[in-house]
Image (cartoon, rainbow, N blue to C red; front, top):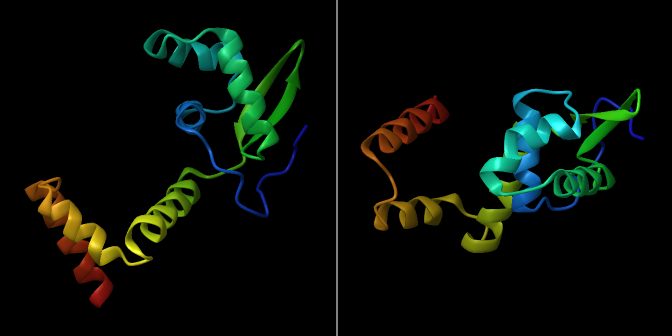
Length: 131
């Protein structure tokens, strides 16, 4: 059982299915396995054993803490969503774009994946960085 409020190192990679569980817990925590399932099982065609397996994996990876609550456990993220997004963004840029963000934006622009709103937001962020 983990009881800390944070983690010293990044957890192991989180799968897409584990990420879906984390999103539910980032939205509201703590939750039981049944509560997590209520948020995911119908949409993903999962069962409670699937959710419990994913929760156990996330605990073993250091991404979740557990706290006994009678005969069940409450799950709480040890990993902040913003930290996870930052780590995964860096991994993506490193792996696909040689560690440089500019080629990522060029690729998104060339593939027309950026809306006018996205471009305006990027321009605002760049202006703030230049200050």
